[in-house]
Image 1 (cartoon, rainbow, N blue to C red):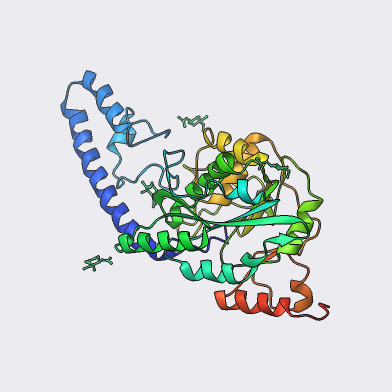
Image 2 (image 1 turned 45 degrees about the vertical axis):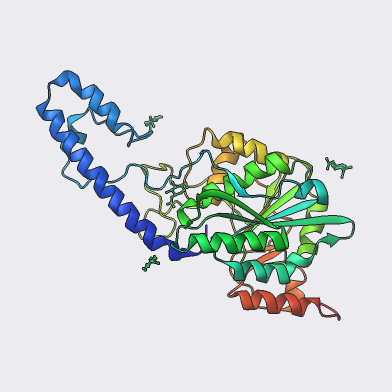
Length: 354
Ligand SMILES: *[C@@H]1O[C@H](CO)[C@@H](O)[C@H](O)[C@H]1NC(C)=O
Ligand SMILES: *[C@@H]1O[C@H](CO)[C@@H](O)[C@H](O)[C@H]1NC(C)=O
Ligand SMILES: *[C@@H]1O[C@H](CO)[C@@H](O)[C@H](O)[C@H]1NC(C)=O
Ligand SMILES: *[C@@H]1O[C@H](CO)[C@@H](O)[C@H](O)[C@H]1NC(C)=O
């Protein structure tokens, strides 16, 4: 949570769509409820199985009269879950990137298709650091498809951008805030398919300042398997206020606390986990909060998260620029793309850090 610097402007159209769809489903249900009472009882099983198409995996049984007669407006049963696993396809891909570069660590950066500015900021700063000692660092941006109107033009521009930089992987799910879990799992699928020879992966948001040298140093002494680290939240409280950006209702996730998870601003893991997490995700109900979801999958796999060797390496709140401090951290959120660029450039200047 706290980290998903995605383009929220898509939100409006999706909510519009959602409420329209909810209304549609509500009408259908209304008709079905009426039928339930009018038609002979033996038909009701058929109806409920039809309704069951909408109410996936929910404990609310429509055969119980109390559920049918409820006066509450109907709401989608699992609004905070996402469409994963799903049959998604890569429409822009770099299938040979890892084979060619043979990286030690792959940086994967989820970004909205329209957010070229963020990609360019990364490309001009920490994205240029392709080699630390003898360790190769490979970088890829991860995109879904745009939900906006101008998607045709956007797609043409993306193809050009991809041709120029060869650093874009795009899958055909809707790129939206509530679909970030899909994005993360597509990342795991991509790694499993195309990058099993790397040692480590870092998922890092595009608005992050990343100290690549420190990242590589951290990973050089990290476990080679079953390793996931970052800013690890332990005992985080599930937010039950519907107005919260990270609200999850009890009906979707009953416990009061999340299992340990690494905050999505930037987390690292050993490559073996990509496949294990893809497999776990076939069984763990997907919630829309992507980092929490990986925590749930890790819990399912019974693999613990590793704290970084010291507390200041990963920062969820922007750290004020200080040359000494920035020379020691791995990742921090920044207040703006401009800060990200300026801080990185300043740190490259010769001279003592502290
Ligand atoms: C219904 O809820 C119970 C207890 O909370 C749980 O064990 C069971 O798996 C749930 N069933 C479904 C279909 O989700
Ligand atoms: C995998 O990595 C090893 C060690 O870095 C390297 O020798 C080998 O060529 C790589 N294989 C492929 C298929 O990239
Ligand atoms: C979508 O495109 C049409 C025609 O180009 C335009 O009139 C409309 O305002 C656009 N809608 C949005 C939400 O951008
Ligand atoms: C998530 O992506 C799927 C697949 O493209 C799509 O059907 C769904 O509407 C999207 N949901 C949101 C909230 O964008």
